[in-house]
Length: 195
Image (cartoon, rainbow, N blue to C red; front, side):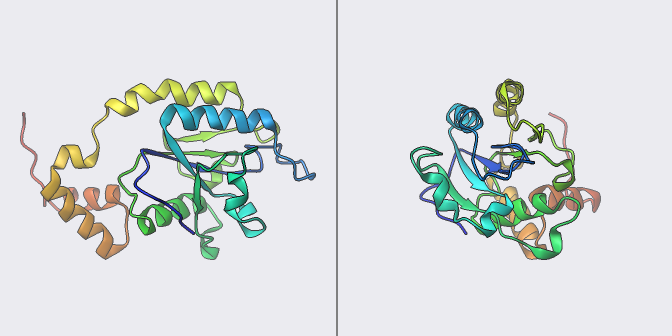
């Protein structure tokens, strides 16, 4: 489900167990320190949050918008795509959410405790499942912030017209922009010029 007003500057795809509380905790309580760490990241990146956790099956994502949790910055939850619960399943759910919400061009990070849910990507930050997010993870995320902001996007590199064509190609095939660009480059559709 998606609730959004305007395009966010940045997104955080957030798991709960192993991030906001120890994965082995069965009391249903979120750790205040972990919530505070995520809020620091969200504020620094001017982010909105999307829930990826299986908590979405039990609790509405709106509950995370309470003032004592994330106070209105949660904008939705990824779709629960049953056949994708294996390797990289959450990654594919994130891509589906980005497409459904027309946010494929918005920079994002994922906070997760299980590496099986995502491919190895520089914007996926793994937490210790026994402790959840800690200051080291926050420092790692915010330490990468400056280089990410300076990196050009696909749209910057291609220009508006060509970027639009790549988006159409990706949408018609239900693939990510990165995959579409790779396919088009391999097919020789794009010839790169120096300078």
